[in-house]
Length: 241
Image (cartoon, rainbow, N blue to C red; front, top):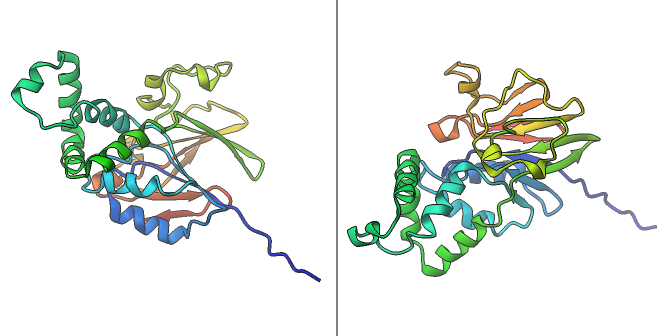
């Protein structure tokens, strides 16, 4: 008689790593990600911390790490695709004012650290990072233990119950202001990052996952030297690093 070991699959969500390579690796080691598991990363992998490109290069080696686009990836993609060469006064003159304004905004929000790291990569790794960023999805719809979830970076701006996810504009997903006091879906749970829980609750000490009104907010402030949170949707176990 052959005894077959049943493979248990687990689904995890994480968001807003913001270049903290050490915490990212700690999280991967803690969950012991198997080939049968799936980890969704809800954007803002990059900026502020010193290891943005290092994280991206590792993520792209895992077929079961599914990245969603955050506003920081969008800003990084927009700028890095044009700044693969040395920045000079001559090159800056060739850029339009909108691009320069966007670049300065990215720098002010931690993009300068990512650019410095990016420029230290080999040409092959630069190209790999840029191509990987283009693969990031805007949203994901998944079901775990008969519970439906919608995964996005920031939220669903101009939300309507009848509006399909594919009809939301990019800006309505990666820059959204989510109302966590409002139930968006009665039969689905919306999982978001982007806005730290401390900012949602107006409580500087808040650094744990927020669950309310069919929302789960999982940005626990890693970009500001607080927690990197991981949630297992199968068991609802919360892990912090």
